[in-house]
Length: 248
Ligand code: 13P
Image (cartoon, rainbow, N blue to C red; front, top):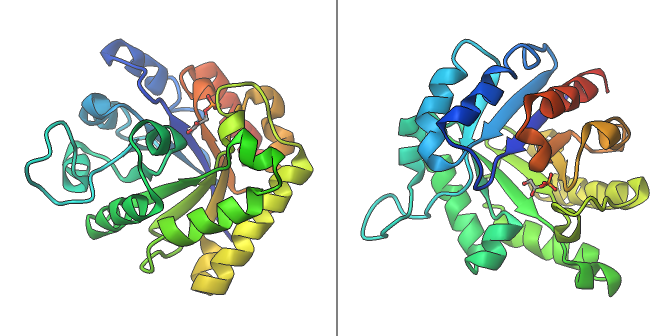
């Protein structure tokens, strides 16, 4: 049985005052079936991990460098995330692929660096609207999955997140059939390559998940949770998503 995962990605939002939202998630996160993760901006990780102490909320980063250390001004290593209190790191988010030119090979190298530091990598995949409309979705996802996931991926060190680029922050959500098609395709690719570990890896859906659509999305085959942007910034919204996942 795969444990469910409710993951929030705060993106470039949040300063110390916003940690009150994290505090207000602690009770809702106290579930038996569901893991809860909030990926804060890097400067907040150490304070967020103190805020989350004694709760079921894990803290994660949103990116790491592939190298262990060196002359990379402004970058953050996986070891630094761990040192600040992170247990997870998002790799290959579409905003980093687009804004920072991250290729599948770079995402795989960052994920390997995460593994080397005992961080769980949340590896993101997703097609653009143009790729969706031209019928390339499964080709794009297959290529990203193969190229971004290191050979050392296991059920314990890897979570896959399917985030269609056109659904992020837009309020547009794929149909449940479209979500099922991609999640089933990812599952088949993972089990073919990783066997039992591929069966055990969690696959999250991300893109405009809200309290109002969470229950139906969580009932879709091979959806093991969500990676939530905007609706993870407010405890009221995220707590409702945790509850929806916990009963699904
Ligand atoms: P939204 O939930 O704001 O659409 O963002 C999704 C996302 O990109 C999470 O990583």
